[in-house]
Image 1 (cartoon, rainbow, N blue to C red):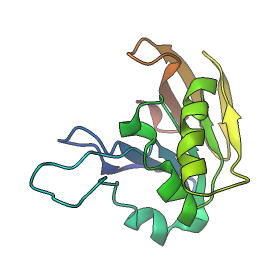
Image 2: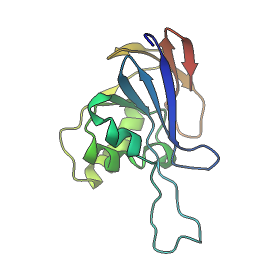
Image 3: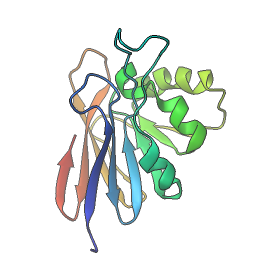
Length: 156
């Protein structure tokens, strides 16, 4: 259906960590956060738990960008793992991008495009009309992200 919008959660629902969602519009995908979860005691030998990247692997050619809401590990810690498989520009505040840079460097990646955005900025990223709304959180420079779509606004 033309103008259809879909939201797919790859982690972060019903758990603390692995925050990762995808907004789909005009046959393009925008990844919203890419965090890790720390393992439970019942998971010996496991260091990190990642979002389920299956949907992104199957649709890698449609990924437009990754948007970070803030710099906590449960929102950025999986970024290096994702970008190894699916290269995409990463949008976020200067601080979020700085924190994410260490994850990207840890993954041995170079040439990743990091795009800083500012409080209140509205930007077109492919077919996505994004607005970055400043919020107060325990880490500075966090954003709520508004996706302005033909089906109304999706606010995360």
